[in-house]
Structure formats: structure tokens, C-alpha cells
Image (tube, rainbow, N blue to C red; front, side, top):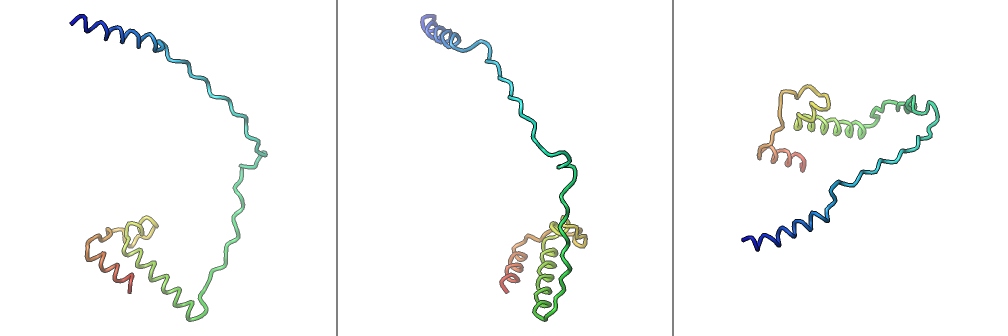
Length: 113
């Protein structure tokens, strides 16, 4: 048994001799030069763009399109009450999204109609 232990001990001693006893020192990070920014450049935000005038539908086609968008938005809020609550719509705070099979089938049928 002692004869077998000698080669293992010699191997351990050789590996230990090759490994550094103390880890090498870590070099400090280089100092970055200060950024050249004009004084006061970051003090105020850029001016806001001018608001667009409100758009009102003038023709029957525009009224129909506006109603289509309004109905689609209302359907989204009703079918996704968590998203509605996240967006600040409080009418659906007492509901969860319906994730049953019939609910998916109903939504798919409404989307393809």
C-alpha cells in the first residue's frame, strides 16, 4: 500500500510546486478622462414638440373607421382586464382574463368574423 501511495504523493507535490502560492495581483482599472460636455447642456430637457390639433372624423367613412377602432379598443380592454387595469382603465379591476377553451373559441370566431 505504501508503494502505491508514493507515486500519488509525488504527483501531488509536483502539481503543488507548479501552482503559484499567492494569486497574481489584479491591475487597477485605468482612469477615464472626463467627458467634454458644454456647461448647462444636461441641465434642461429638450423642448416638447408642438401638440397636434385634435382630429375629428368628417366623412361617414371616417366615422365608421373611428367606430371600428373604438370597438376594437373596448373589446381589447374587456377581454384583457389585467392589461386594462395596467393602462389605468378601472372598469375591469374586478376581473381576470378568461382562459378557458370556449373563451378562446369565442375570441377566435369574433376575430375571423
